[in-house]
Image (tube, rainbow, N blue to C red):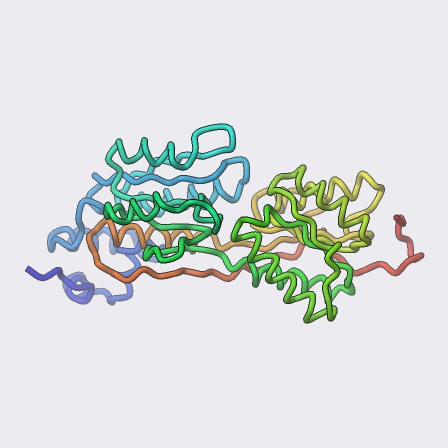
Length: 341
């Protein structure tokens, strides 16, 4: 028996195929009664398997919940999966707690039908990825978010960090800055490498070269951002692009410790547009990740696999957007009211 098509469901319900696709992929914008009719007919035709009937259980693993962006993304994926009748368990792997492998072992023992892995070992190109290949050989559906594994044919979801960092540099250059520093995370991580690549390309384009002293490798924490900012300020940076909002807030703290004003003396840009960005003082200019769209793509990719569809794996790459707030401003000429260094 052949699997019914989206067009057949659309004809039965009296809606467009695009509407049926939106319902089955968990996307918003469909009236509740229409959504219910589409799901009812899809179940009657056998188009929805256990993944849509409320009996599927999947796991979501994030590296930490201290970073608001990870918590927001995990929650959004959980919500999207719930719209398909899938229950998700969220685990947070930390440096001093359960590891990604620990959680995978427990989740598989619980009989999870699929996995969404957010910025785990797949975010480190040099790490041992053998267990990902083993999961694939065991036909465990999975989606990798924030990284990839070479030669592993599974769907991935990521934000274009290189483009985002280049957008930040362009914004700062438009404000008159040329001594623009990058406070990046650990360089062995793929997102850090992508941000550095975008930064270097933009600096060459807008300033004609790169001063290696304007790159500070640190970690993705507030204290890491403060440490990196101190080094960049010592190197004469008038603007700093940080690897995430936590690091940017650390950079603001480091600048204020020196009596520098943000943005009058130094401009600072974060990444993620977490809830911290809008409520910081000053409000943080940042790169916004399209969390809802990324979560929908991850959930849909997993649902397709859990439902038994044999679809080619797709790499979903999303473009961030620049959110301008008060932490970035025009370069103040020396002697024009600057607090000085």
